[in-house]
Image (cartoon, rainbow, N blue to C red; front, top):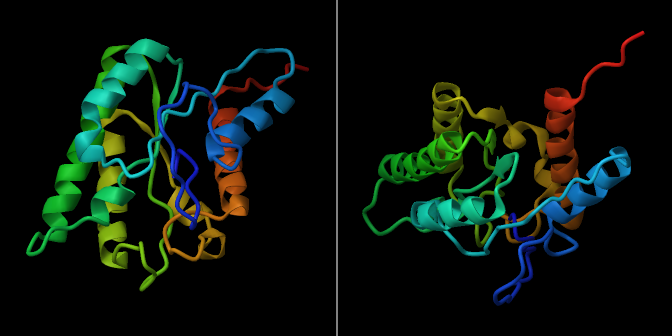
Length: 200
C-alpha cells in the first residue's frame, strides 16, 4: 500500500528513496505538503516495498530510518501479514506477532527521538482475492490501537476514515482516489499535530 500497488500488480526493482510512484500516498502527500507549506522544504520519502510483511521488516525499517534520519515516521504495515496465514495458524497468533513487529519499529524510532504516526489498516472487501477476513483486520486494528497508546505512537485510524468504496477490485489496495484520500488523512493529522495557531 505504501509503495503504491493497485489492483493491477506492480513489478518494481530497487528504487531510490524518494516520494515513490505517482499513485502512492507518499507521492500525493509530497504534493500536498509542498502546496501547503510553500515557505518550507519538506521531503516525503517512500520506503514501502510491495509484498513485504511487518514480521520480516524490522531490520529493513531500522536501516532505512538510520540512513534517512527522518523527523517523522508514518507507519502503515501489516496487511500482508494477515493475508498470509499458514494452514492451522490462528488469527490471534498472527495478530500478536505482527503487532509485536510494529512495536519494535515504534521503539526503534523512539530510541532515535523520531515520533511515529501509526495507522490502522484500511477496510478490506470480504471475499475479494487479496482480502483478509474481517475478523483478522478488526482484531489487528484493536491491537494496534492498544499498542500505540502504550508506546506513545500517535494513532491514525485510517480504517474509520477510508471508505470501502475507495478500495480497489482486489479487496485490499486502495484505488487512486483512495490513495489521494489517504494522503489527505495523513496531512490532516500532521496539520493538527504541528501547525501553530496564528496569534491575533
